[in-house]
Length: 467
Image (cartoon, rainbow, N blue to C red; front, side, top):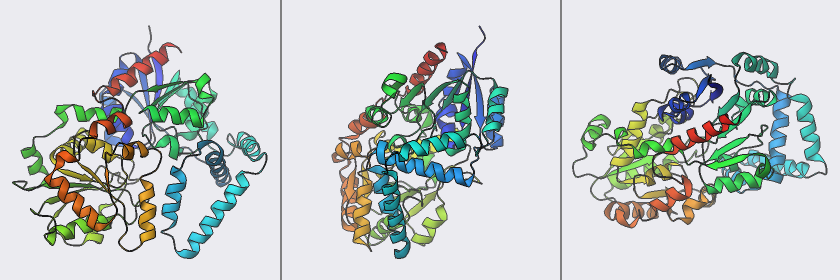
């Protein structure tokens, strides 16, 4: 029997880790013919896929007119008001708005208030969606995508990033053509922090029970029209595979750390667009080490976020004898478009395994670090602005992060003094900080057996069998 053709989209470097480096694409190859559609010309990765026997197509990104983009913004605003109804979006907007100059902040707050009032007018939602239905085929590159779907001749579609604008019009054209639509949502914060999904999928795969509940709350019709499966997070499978872990001696040589009798603090930075003031925390730790307030002169290994630039951190910190800077995978054009390699994954796994205390601000890295049973500390203050510090602490109360905080899997530092105190105690008594790591993992990624990619493949096989 001829294998069914399934379109697999890639519009983000993290998708490469999930789909290809995990072995998932090879697993799909056993029961289907993957047709890989990538939205940027990552020549080395495309060549690697083709050498492995995969059919690969470089495809155009979605294109919107300005007026259609404004309409989608308004639909998202309406959707947040009436359907999403979570705290996450408001928390983040309020936090980031506070970094604007005073007049801009007031204007932005007033505009958001006005939008909220507008969205509550009787019949507003119906008018927006009627307009969207009338516009989306003519105000986008929809016809180009329809022709592409016809040429690719697929029976089903699999995407990790259904919220990405890059794929939006393609996925819409696939749905209109009657293809089986399957998604495995890439991150545990996407359900509550992203906007309206124009495509109704036949199958949704999510990390955990919370995401399952959130999907049904936001899209109640899914209870009758779709299958929602908790498969865990395939990108965490690497952490349970020893072949992705260097020895500490080999890792130390590669990173350039003389780790003899010295503790190592891993600081995982966040992106500037979400955490513009974050370098202050790295500077606070660096200065505390230099002043002898953290005994033993531990080393700080700083990991730059893949969609951030390390230069902003070096400029903020200045010369340091305590920090080793390490870049992550990043694209040369768009930072989010890069070939995420096995070497990158080995480096990340080894960083997590061979460091002693992990620090990040409200990041998925808390979960990554918990997989290696390491103390997790989160800064939640501002040295210059107490209001900003209070707003930062609310970021840890976003819906997706609440189960972590309730699990007591991360210790929140409410001041510079408290951060240094927590670091010292965690370095000296790590056993007191890791008791809830297993609970964090069960709450967020559900499965810790390293077989989540297999679960995704099983669900995909079952879905294709029904086509």
